[in-house]
Image (cartoon, rainbow, N blue to C red; front, side):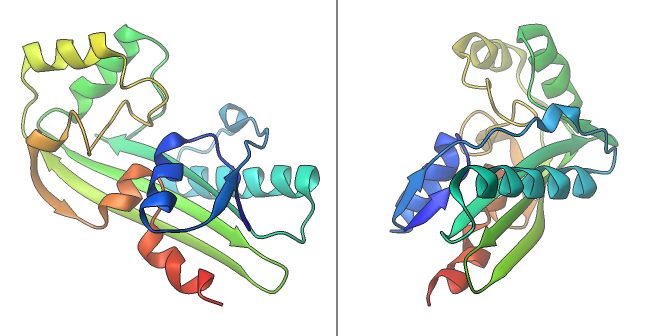
Length: 182
């Protein structure tokens, strides 16, 4: 049975949608302590840190999957918003911009290890202010990298996309599936 070393309901939803049996267990790793400014470095070290935390807590003999995602716009890593004002600031940077969503996932079993670093680039139209305020008030942005929901609020603003939507949602499942077939 696969262990999803993440508290993310979105990642769990992706696995369920693809018929993957798993148990979800959050493994403590302080990703806020990382000081990497390059998005790919940040998510790699966060996903690997989560894997090491899960192995320490659960052992290394069970298949474990960990992941981390960041959103970048205008050259800045946009982490999870701390409050409404921070969510507004972060989303303003994405409005009418190219936004790259970078996900690193690490799968490890007794026999193999797979690390994937993927990104999906969206070009967003400018966000409608009233729509943005409704989204902020809804609180749906909480816990989301860059306060971004490509499957929700951001969807009608997508002008173009390059990459997998699953990557943008936090788990590039299309690249994981072949590793789970054994």
